[in-house]
Image (cartoon, rainbow, N blue to C red; front, side, top):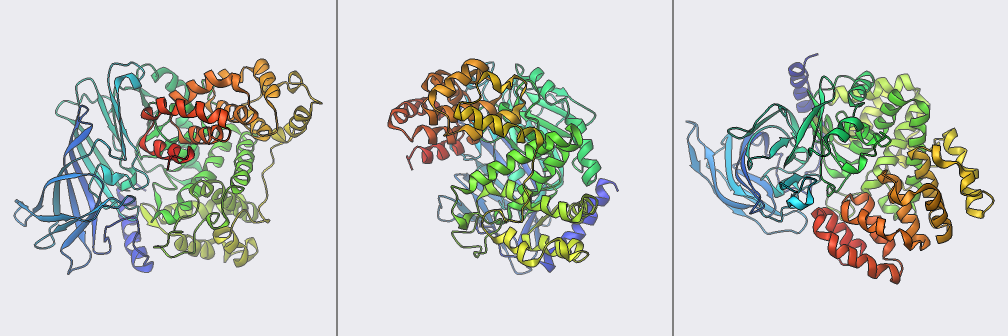
Length: 618
């Protein structure tokens, strides 16, 4: 089925689903999308690096659902509005009245546009603030060449409103186009159809024909080169990093083919990637047509490409079928984590996939130790307006995947694959709720074989704390063989040389370092470092775990490398736990505060906020 036919079919299905599943409005949005919905967005913006601002207008195409409504409510944060216009029936633009509501630290400000009727198009002229939470403006010294500045966005979860006045909720999907002006020498890329041969003359132009939610709006501006990986895959990166990125991501086209084999056609045209500067706060962001990636995944040996598999998997779970609000987050991340394992198995074999799955599940069990039970559910039973609206977002990844692996084990892979592909096909380009998935599960899998899972167990997985006892843990034989070595090394019966770890892969090192953390003393860590030079490893996942274990053990000879790591890497997954570990002992805390004082300005605003909390500054 071609893309236009798919879009028409999915639109009809969505309208039917909308009426069948009335759900509460997203409490993190001011938008009343039960009255009017954005169907298309056009952006015309100019990037000003001196002012750290985007300036121009956003044009919204509207679909009025409530025949009596004449007010458009949008989400904003720190936007300066200069004027708002509405297009009349003759195509002329006329001034519209508007007001900004009270500022809220979490939600920003509502923008109320009062219209004389139900105009189809509204144009908002505005500029962003230098402190926009979605945008990070980097100085040339923070880039690889040191010649040009760089800017990138991170709109998820509700930061799109800081650079676009929009209905900032995953419940609303829209197509978009854009024209962006940028300084000479810089390339603009967006989560849309990027032309690798474009020059930017007359502005950089983009079109996204598939409807997306606001959190997938993305932009990057910098000194960038492009490299083709396959017929529909490519990568953008700073010139000094493009060759390394091209090597590391060489298997991307194979991953797309593997995912299509499992879950149906890739519906987004191209799959390109952008390698960002180190301050990017997360591992990857699944912006459609242009995944944003941390440079920390470039290890030189393709050992961390599971991150690519994860972001690619979002092309089905998250981008194609989207959680309707962040309460239903597991429908994005739990599904994607499950699909990631399946893609890895298709490309690299069952044992590699099992190793990653076992490590994922072990880290989930560790995660539970620090989480209150109320935050351990996949979906909270609390009402949408409650302070306990969200479960823990990190646990949603492995627990959601564990639940789906359990269903697969009991239903059989063939039956479960058919079921899951049907879910993606039947809900393509829709925003969905947990109740919709459970209804689909009961009708299309459990009704055919009730023994797969009882209602009581289903309730335990979705709404209960922890991992149900019925959840079977994955066991990799290669990782299982490590257990004796780990125990022996900790108690001294196995020497560091006897570990024979020079042939270990990244998963084996990660398990080893996870398991010895808080068990090995400084002398043991020093010996490990002497034999295997872990303080200087190029694998950032391994480096992070070694540094964390070293901090806990009091192995302070690693401080020069740890300082370099904290000064150059802004990924929250790494820096937040390291600062938290350093805060535990007075002799480490003072040193860490000195490092953070120098490093803070290099971090993304989201990372700054998280580290501030870890350091007890909030």
